[in-house]
Structure formats: structure tokens, C-alpha cells
Image 1 (cartoon, rainbow, N blue to C red):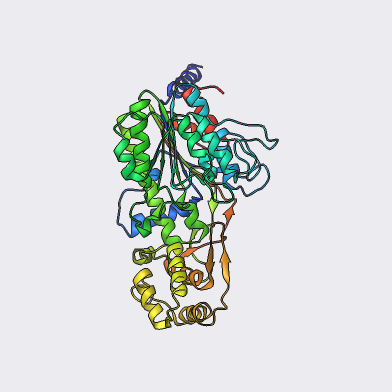
Image 2 (cartoon, rainbow, N blue to C red):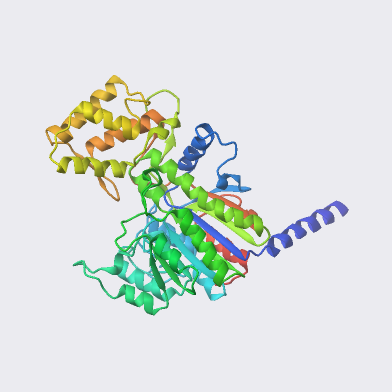
Length: 465
């Protein structure tokens, strides 16, 4: 009897301790398209190629589990439905943002926390009106309603936004509409690029919208391409923390999306995915440093909206070997190499197979440090001829781009040499990872659904809907 009473008291004490852990500072990291295989590939590269004895920052967190990600309309979610689940705790149909399946608006944890005095920052390495960031402030039937999404951003009242661009700024004819004026009328200072932001960061600007450039492209340049002038996710994350510490020092919420992971995974570009996850992890490390200064008041949760591509260590046919050092010789993303090939074709200058081999060696290590079998070289040369000589090669369509047969064949070889396999150019229904550390982190333990995560965050902060 005494033993039972003692055990009950211990359990009650643990329960009270868990409920007492109310985080004042919440970081929510979402790796777009980042499945378990993606994380494992990056961790394996980190260990075997970079020689790091410490795990990726997210893998050092005491809580590591998985969650389901299906939507209300499909066993395989899109980013809109997944973003809505992760932000509001509500399942919805693919393509819908901030609404339940009956088109009734549902509200994100960011809004609930903002209404309860928290500072809020929403940041991403892709357009700020994209599905995942949009799910934290908008309510639309279709994720492509960019103008309406932009208006909801303006009305949100959140403290800080950062991304590459706002696609709703121009109408169907490409003319500038009133969206930017509306955003500024709602009190936002708009900065384009790091240099412009650095000029205003020391001045009083309680509400900020940071975009990569006035004519920004769909996403920030990939880490592997080292594009000068692009906003880096680390810079964006640091700016979020700095801004909120200045204007809401007592409590804040930050959502940071690593959007480039998804873009690279849709292209089945293994080397670029690995480098993007390493870059994403650096942003997580910034939050972790903040956590170490405020361990009893900070919560960090890392997850993904879905798995893109079904990336895995291991290929369909071949030896059970993985050599991710292949990615050390990769100096271009598939997307950038596609652009190079298009420009080369447009120039009208002829190119021989031997010249292309030299280019592949310089850009990817193929036929140099990375050995290519005679069989695969023959297939590559035949594809090269169809693309550059006879001009009758086919194309591969992915969610964000169309790639030539030759470019896809080149990166298939690159993946195979590294030992990376793929199942799709699209999303899969696999489990997504969940990592957590800090105040109340243990509440995320066990198998979860994506709708559980925002509910747990709200419960831990003591904020009610």
C-alpha cells in the first residue's frame, strides 16, 4: 500500500512538473518535404564525409519520434493540407489553407499566441505566400489565391515575415496591384535583400516584411550553388530572433520553414537535398543556442509537412554500398545544371560528347573523381545525342520544373554512384520526423499525427483557443 501511494505521488509530481513547464519562447521548424530518409542521408554525410562526431543538431534532441501526415482528402497530403494540420490542428483537403473541409476558417497557433501577447515571426526560404507559411495566417479554398493570401498577411498583425517574394503582387497581366501598398498601410516596413534590411534593422520598425529581392525568384538559391546576394536561411532565422527579442522580449513564437529541401527533392537531386538539410540544421542550431541561454523557458519542435520523393540510402540495383563523398564533387544543383544546358542550347554553339564529359567532371565529378561504368556512359551519351544533336529527347515534369532527359539521366547516375534511391518525383505518405527539446518536450513522445503538434504547443503554453 505504501509503495502504491509513493508511486502515485511520484507520478503526480511528474505530471505537475510537466504542466508547470510553460514555454515563453517557442520555435517551430518545418523541413518542407523532409522525410526520414532525407534526414538519415544528411546525418550519414555529416558523419562519414564531414567526419563530425556530433549528430545533426535536431538529432541531439531528447525527443525523437514520427507522425502521420495524411490529409482529409488523400492518404498522401500536399503542403497546404499538411501546413493547415501543423498550424491549426485541423485536417483539411489538399490545396486548402486555413480552412476545414467544409471551408470554415480555422485559426493557427500563431494567431492564438499573438492574441495572447506573444510576438510572432513567420519565415521561409521560398515565397512567403507559399502553402506552409501561408497556413499560419490565411484562410483560402485554394493555395494559388496569392493576392488573397497576401491580403491576409497584411491583416495578420504578426511582427515579422521573411521569404523570397510575394506572388500576389501582380495581376494576370503582370501589372503591379495594390497589395504592397496595403501591406505598408498596415504598418509593415518592407525590405528587399540583406543589405537593405541591415540599413533599417537598428531603427524602429515593429512590423517587418523581409523579401529576398524585388524581382526575387521562386526560392532562395540552393546552398550548393552559392548564389551571391540570396538571403540565407541562417540570416533569416537570426533576423527573426533579433526582431522578436527587441519588440517582444517576454514571449514569442517563431516558425521557420526550410522550403528548399522540397524543391530539391521534387527534382530527385540527392546532393542538393543533403546540403539543404545541413543548412536547415544550422538555423535550428541558432535556436538551440537561444535555448541553452533560456533552458526552462524555451521549446523547440522540428518536423516536416510530408516526405517528398521517398529518398533512401540504397538503390534498386547495385551493391549494398553508399558513398556520399560523391556529393563533395557536386558543385551545382540539378536546377542550375538544367539552366546551363538550356543556355548552351540557345547559344547555338555545338558541343561534343568529350566536351560535355569535361563539363560533367568539373560540375559533378563524373568521369573524374566519380567513376562511371561503360554501360552508364553509353546511356548518358545516347541521351546527350538526343538532347544536343538530334534534338528529339524527351522531358521529365516535376512539381516545380521541367527537366530534359539528359539532365535527369546525369543526376540519376550521380544518385546511383552515391547510393541514393528515390521512389517518386512527388510526395509520399511516409511518416514524417518529429524532434523536440526544452520546456514540455516530453509531451511529443510516442506516435503522433500532424494535428497533434500544434495542440500540444498550445497546451504547453497555457493558451486556449
